[in-house]
Length: 484
Image (tube, rainbow, N blue to C red):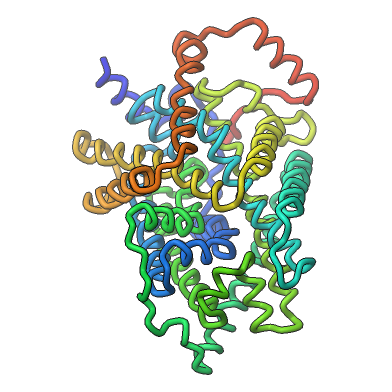
C-alpha cells in the first residue's frame, strides 16, 4: 500500500494536464530569464552583511574565503541535484512538491507548515533588517546604529512592501527590475575598487592569512550558515518548473551558468573588502560595504549606502513577491487554509498570503537580530534540503526506471546530504542552543493540525465562517491556474 502511494504520484506528476488539472501555467521562462532569476534572487543582502560574521566565526581572512568558495560549491552541487529532481517531477513548488511526491503527505505538510509560518517570514525579516542597517547608516557616521531605529526602519520596509505587492503585480515586478540594476552596480563598483587597491599593493590582510583559524565543528557550521545565507535562492528555479521552456534543458543549464557566476562575484567582493580594511576593521563594522565606501570612495561613499539599501530593498521585494508560491501549491494540495490561496478580486494579487507573511515577519523583527534569524533560517532550510536530497537518492537507487533527461552523478547528492547532516547537527553538538529545540518542537507541533484537519478532513464550522468573513473583509476569491 505504501509502495503504491509513492509510485503513483511520481508517474502522474509528469502528465497533470491529462488528469485532475487540465489548466497549465504559461511556459515563458527561458535560459536568459532563468539565469537572471537565480542570480537576481541570490544576490541580496547576504554579501553586504555576512562577510563580517563569516570572518568572526573563522578567525582569519584566508579561512573565510575558503568558506565562501565552499558555500558556492555546495550550492552548485545542491542545485545540480535539484535539477535532476526537476526533470523527474515537472511540477512547481520546489521542496514541498518533491517531498510530497516521494515521501507522502505528512512530511510535505510539516514542510509547508514550517515554511509558511517560519522559514519564509524569517528570510524576509533578515533581508529587511539588512536594508534598515544600510538605510540609516549614513545618519550615524562612525558608530553603530541603534537597534530600535534599525527595527523600526525594517518594519516600515515590510509595510511598504506589503502595500506595493497587494496593490499591483506589475508595480512589484517593476520595483524588482529597477533594484536589480542597483545591486549589480554596487557589486561592480566594489569589485573594481578592490582590484585597484590590490594593484597598488594593499595586500596586508592576506599576509599570514590562516593565522588564528577556528577549528570547532560547531563554529565552522555557523560560519557556513552565514555564508550560505548569501547563496540562498540557488533552488528558486525549481519553484517555477511548470513555467520553464523545455525544463529538462533550461533548468540544468541556467544553474550551471548562474551559480558559478555568483560564486566568483562573491569571492571578488570579499577580496575587495579585505584589501580596503584590516580584519579588525571589518569585524567592527556594522555595515561592511559602507565602511568600504568611506575608505575607498571618500565623499562619494553615500553612493554605496544608497546602492546597497536599494539592492536589499529589491531583494526583499523579490522574496515577498515569490513568497505566495508554496502557499498556493500547498493549498492546492489541501495542506494549507484555502484563504491563503485566494487573490484580491480587483488587484488580482495573493493578498491574504502576503498579509500573513508580513505579520509573521514583523514578529520576527521585533524578537530577533539579523545574525540569530539567519542562523535559525539556515538550520530549518538545510533540514528540509537534506530531506529532499535523500528523496533524490531514493529515486536513483530504487526507481532508476523513471524517465529523466538529466542525471547527476550519485556522488554529488551524497556530498550534499552529508553537508546537510553536518550543518544541522554540528551546531547542536558543539554549541547547543535552546532556540533550536524550540524550532524542532514547532516543526513537530504540525502533527496537532495534520491529523484532524488534513488526514481526517475535519473542518469545524467556525473555520468555514472565519474563512467566509475574511473573504468578505479582504475582498478575495479562490484562484485557478492560467489556461494555456
